[in-house]
Length: 114
Length: 111
Image (cartoon, rainbow over all chains, first blue to last red; front, side, top):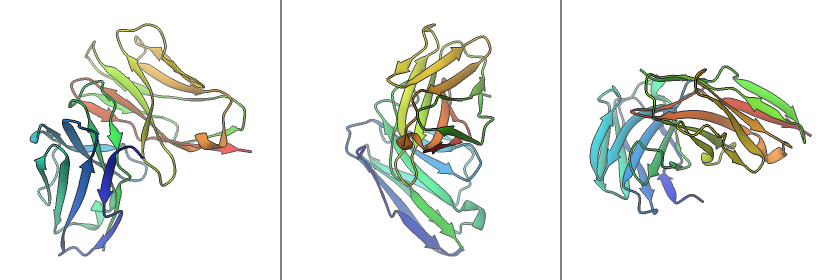
């Protein structure tokens, strides 16, 4: 569809588990983003990476740990999560970080923490 | 800090009718961009329309148009001739020094 893929699409994990979300973009973009989408709340921007460097971290708890090994891949490592962390996690990419350039979104990972 | 407010959690429209989704924002910046994104059920979020703050002319994209009122910090989306495929969650977004999204409006289209 839009050139941004996310795996897995669904994830159920216990509070003591460690898991990782993966995002890959095939658009040649230089910026990548992680968002958290919870019901009836604004879409929350978690992290912004520009050219593999983290340029924004919006007070996200340390139990979420992003990793950007190259400009095409972005990971979100999860450990000791809480039930309130259950949400849809969206990855996006854009030509340049935080400008008027359109963001291309992935399909999201539906995370349930039990 | 910049904020984006979408005051309508849900809206309904009859097929072929027109509907307007509201968005207001708060900022002290003079140079920024505004977007409307569409997230269909179980599908990826896509850009619907974009508006540069320095442009007075309202952006249009086929059946989608905006009413941008810079002084009032208002950025509403008008969908004309609504179609069943327009049913989705619509997000208003602000992009200046920060990138901020609203909470979204669910649009239902009745046949």
